Each structure stands twice: as structure tokens, then as C-alpha cells.
Amino acid sequence: MITLYHYLVLSCILFAIGVAGVLLRRNILIVLMSLELVFNSVNISLAAFSHFLQSMAGKVFVVFTITVAAAEVAVGLAILVVIFRQKKTVYVEDLSEMRH
Amino acid sequence: MVEAIAFYVFGGLSVLTALLVIFQRDPVRSAIYLVACFIQVAALFVLLRSPFLAAVQVFVYVGAVVVLFLFVIMVLELKKERFSEYIHRGQRPWALFIIPALIGEVGYLAVKGKSKASLGPYSEEFLVKQGSTESLGKVLFTKYIFPFEVVSLLLLVALMGAIILTMKRGKE
Picture 1 (cartoon, one colour):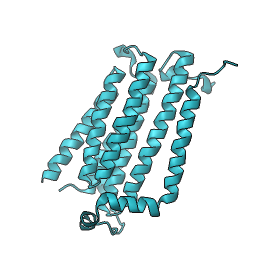
Picture 2: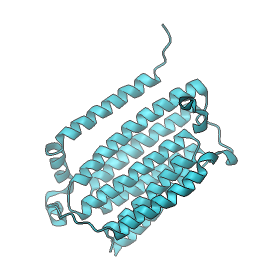
Picture 3: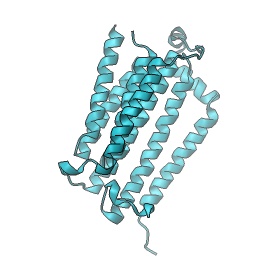
Picture 4: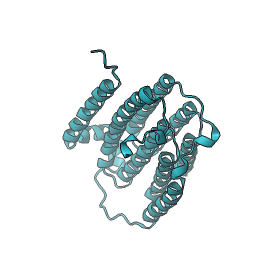
């Protein structure tokens, strides 16, 4: 019998993998892909709550999350293209002007 | 029983493909594994009785987001990374500390936590009778109409922002 907790544990594992990708990888493209994994794990947990608590709010919020994720990826990739045009790099540690 | 097998197959494959996404050196391969992961998540949405979300997942993520990633990879002409340099060395201790803490905390809460929320009106029989997509649409366009409009405006602004950011300027 699959319960809410199974879905929550799966969502937790996917979230941790996404965070690992964001922290470990140097390539901004992969960092953005890992962010998408994080969004997906949250979507799973929202849909699971919605299904097991028999409510509709979670599913509505999944629709909103998917929209926001699409907007985020569009702007993020646009920024990445501009950065690459100016600096010819996609590695996160080469982009430290804002720090000092 | 069938549902349990399906859950373990799709869940396991989604975890496997997610791991492959972050441990590939070639960004194109990462994008392909990302497609596989998104399709597994769409299958999980079907298991959660929301076929509309599964369709939206495939359309938006596989159809739009990953294609956008592939276009950017194509435009940037990246070289393949060498093995020693694809992991961010400085952040590895942080990651090794944060990720087990995160799994431990959320796993503890997920297993030990008790849900006290009362069940809503959308039971399985109700969804079979009314149609789950239909009920989702009714809620989305009545109770949640304001957030819906805000999100559509956000999408428009993001679209304009992406176009303006990538426009070549400096001609004048």
C-alpha cells in the first residue's frame, strides 16, 4: 500500500539530489537543470498532499509552480547567454564580480 | 499491488535519472536524462490521479524547458568538460554537510509527522464522477482566479525580460 509518506520520501530524495547538483556542479547550465529537479520534487509532494488529503489546492499550486519554473528558466537562460557573450565562460566561480 | 509496483518503478527510475543528470559531463546528455526524469514524474502524477498535471508536465517541461536548454547549449558551443573540473571543489564540504542533514531532517519529518488536516470533498469517487481535470479547472477559474492572473502576468514579464536581456544593443 502506497501512502503519503512514500511520496514524501521520494520527493525528499529528489530534492536532495537537486540541491547536490546546485552546490556541486560548476556549469551554470547544470545548476539550472538541478533547480528544475528541485521544482519537480516540490511538485510531487504538492500533488501527493492534494491526492491523499482529497483537496484541490495542491494540484492548482502545481500548475502555478510549473508556470513560475518556466518563467525562471527563460530569464535564467537569457542571463546566461548575456554572460557568455561578455565573458566566454559558463563556470560559476568565474562570475565573482558582485562579491568584491 | 499494481500501484505499488508502478510507484517503485517510476520513483526508482526518477531518482536514477536525476542522479545521472547531475553526474554527466556533457550538458546535452544531462538534458536528455532530464527529459527521462520529467517523464517519470509525469507518470507519478498519473498515479496521483491527476492526468492533467501529467500532460502539463510533459508539455511545459519536456516540450518547452528542455528544448530551451538544448537551444542554449547549441548556441553557446560548449566544449566537453574535463573530468577533474566538473565538480566545484570549494563547495564540496558544504554539500557533504548539507545534503545528509537535509535528507535526515525531511525524512524524519515525513516518517514521524502526523497529518491533522481534515479530508477535503474531492474523494476518489467524486473525482471519478466529476472528472479530475474538470474539477481542477472549476477551482482554478473560480477560487484561484486572482493568483492565476498574477501568474500569467509574471509569465508575460519574464518573456519580455528574456527578449530584452538577449537583444544586441550598442548600435546607437
